[in-house]
Image (cartoon, rainbow, N blue to C red):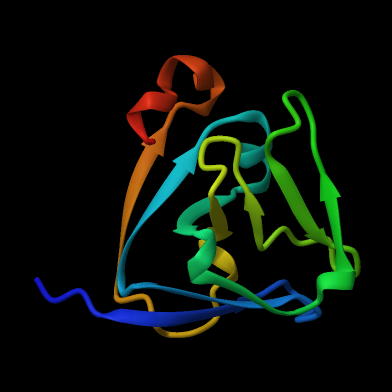
Amino acid sequence: MNNNIVTHVGSCHCKEVQFEATGEENIEVIICSCSICSINNYKHYIVPKESFKLLKGKNSLTTYTFNTKLARHMFCNVCGVKSFYTPRSHQNSISININCINSDTVKSIKNINFDGKNWDKNITKIT
């Protein structure tokens, strides 16, 4: 199967925060059932930090942490959307909300369900 490398472009709702990420056109997305992901319907597309570039909005980001304080949830302070963040499970990566990619560069999506309600017990299945 041909899996080209493309540049995905995305943003928050108001477009105050804009980013790009280099990755494959056929992607895997993690659907997590933890307390914050499930309430926000966040769908994780995880890329290495070096494949991610914030294009606009650094001063419009607000960071939220809880529990272990390892995950750094970043929200647009204008529209409130979390388009990306640093996940606890992948500290050297960026998790992009697939719903925030607004380019037509994604060819296919394979969903991977993750039992985040039981995070400690299941984390080794996705790292």
